[in-house]
Structures are given as structure tokens and as C-alpha cells.
Length: 453
Image 1 (cartoon, rainbow, N blue to C red):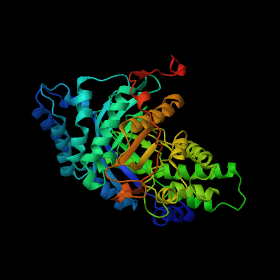
Image 2 (image 1 turned 30 degrees about the vertical axis):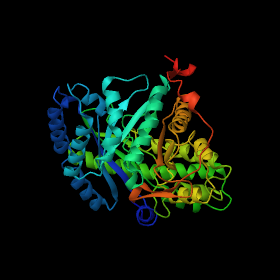
Image 3 (image 1 turned 90 degrees about the vertical axis):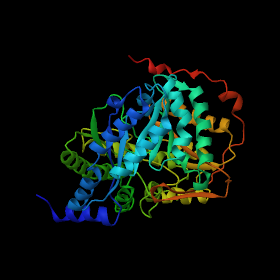
Image 4 (image 1 turned 180 degrees about the vertical axis):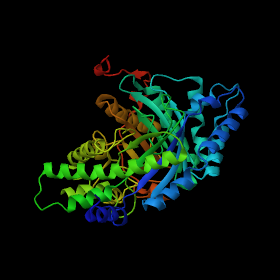
């Protein structure tokens, strides 16, 4: 029996606390698009995306109206393009990127993820060519997102790839200088990347995934904050964790319902639901706001890492009870530019770069949407990437770096993208040199716990 208070609670989640389905992402294998002729590859890619995703946006919009639950983003993720292009006699990865962009525009999705390579143990010819093409591809398209996995708990850290990605990030930022270096905002470097993540910029269709599937990413930081604030005064940590679990269960149930309904309409399999609390720049839709509801003065106070650890764990425990198909990243995101509370904390100096790095040891992803001075050296960026990859490798978790060396900008300036990408102050980082360390190259060996067969 549906009780009145449950109906009112759900309405309040949507209308007052920014509950939404952050993204529905159609994961699509392009392995059957391979050819020796790059023009044929492009034709195959365009035809497949426009065939499978032609109704994604319209059906999602209809479902949002039927259930009065906003579905914010509709996206497509594809097989890592380094694999698709390397069979061509004359690979042209920028041309493939433009084809993906055209297909995305045709079907109306806001992003296509999968301009990607998996190089944690080394490069193929296609991997190297794709990475070299990333800056131009991101500068000449609107809807393409790129990711490269350079480390894993099984393989260690490919330091040659780390250094190459530092150069790629810098170049992507310079080529899009007129747009606040947005190219770097659509590029992410991973450790332990999942192949079913629905969120950008890291989404792609993993090689072990089916022909197609619908993956769903939920949101709800505002809902969690409101639930915590409604607790009786003096509630202890166990009561706090239980309330977060209960709320995560409700959020996940909503996402599961919408995902399964949409997959049925599209006549494709339901894939996974990603439990991640994905914030936005909207007031009240902030993970940093949850920390304040827990009792911290602001994000960055001592205790922030502990609060984030509890939040992340409780979200997973609650969400896993609502769905048998949880995947992607699942937990809590801490992107600086996409979270109103994190933006405020960074602007006021409450949140420093080192504190953010510490928080990534317990969050869903890593150093996300952080703007740094444009004159930051490639070796320093490589050191930042290496540190974050080490956290993921040792802790057997996904970590990532999406960092923006904003060309022509310095500490005190800011970047602004609008929409979900938001805005961010340029953060100060260490001036100490990493150059002799990162230029050693080679591979940092996997930790001993990788030998667990």
C-alpha cells in the first residue's frame, strides 16, 4: 500500500532537494565497425550510433514526463576508440572523433564518451596515435569526452603514459585557451577504470560489455543533506550513517525504476546503476553541503576526510540493497567546479590541493575538475597524476585526475564553463620540482596484493 507520507517525501526530494537522474548512458560496442579503411570505419560508426540511439533522448524525455522525475543528461559511450581505429591502414583519429561528434549531434545527446585508450601496461600503435590526437580532437569537437587508463592494481603505473598524458593535458588546455581551456575539462586520466561507468568524462563501453546496455547515474546530494538535517539534535554517528543508507536506498530505487523502464522502451538490456552522489553548481545540491549538515563548519575542516569516508560507505551500503546491478564508480564525487559548496570552500581558502588529494583516498573518483595555473609544468602535472594513480593502485579502487592547467591564468583567476561543468578558482599547487622522478619512465610495479590468484 502506498502511503501519503511516502508520496509527499518523493515529491519533496524532486521539487525541493534537486533529486534527479543525472544521466542515462547508452553503452554501445563498436567492435563490428572495424575496417582497414578509415572512411568505412566512420560510416559504420555513424550508422550504428544513429540507429541504436535514435530514440534515446525522446524516450527519456517521455519517461521523465510520465514519472515527473528529471532526467538531466542523455549520453552515449562506445568501445575505446584506440581499438577501433588501429586496424586502419592510415588511422585518422581526429576524423573518427568528428564522426562521433556528428552522430551525437544527430541523435541529440550531450556527450559521447570513449575517445579512450587502456595503456596501464604499455602502448599499441593505436593507443599512441589516439593519445597524440586527443588535444586536436577535443579542440575541434563539442561533444567528445576522452579518457586514458594508465594504471591498475594488477599492472602498476605506466609512468611513460603518465608523462605523455601530462603533455596531452597541457596541449588540450592551450588549444582551447579561448574557452577557458575546456579541452582539459573533457579529459580524464584513470587508475582501475570501470568499463560500465555512465558519467563523463570517463565513460566508455568496456571490452567485456554486451553489444549495448543502458547504464544509469543517479544524483541526490541535496536529498541526503535534507535527511541529515531532519535528524533529531544530538544524533550520533551510527544514526547518521543509518539515515544516509536509508536515503541512498530510496534514491537508488528511483534510478533503478527509471533505468529499467527506459531500457524496456529502447528494447535493450539494463546495464548497471551507478550510486554516485553527483553534485551540481545549483544551491543545495552539494556534497560539501552534506559535510556541513554532518557538523563541519565547511568542506576542508579537519574531519572532512572522515565525513567523506562515512558518506561514501553508507551510500554504497544503502544502494546495494536497492539493486542487484550496481556498477560504475558508486559513492560520492568531489569535483571542485561542479559543486557550489566546494567552489565556495576553494575560493575562501578552506580547501587546499593537498586536502583534496587526501579526500580522494575515500571518495568515488579523485582529483576532479580542479583548475591550476596555466604555467604549471608538465612534470608537475605528471607528479600529480602519479600520486593519484598510486592511491588507486594501493587501495584497489578507481581514482582519476581531471585537472585544468588554465592557459594564461594564475592563482586568483577563475574558469567558467556554465551548466554542469560550473566554475572554479585557480588553485595554488606546490612549486617543488618532480622532473627527475617522473622522467625516469618505465613502470612502477604493482603492489604485492596484486598476486592474489
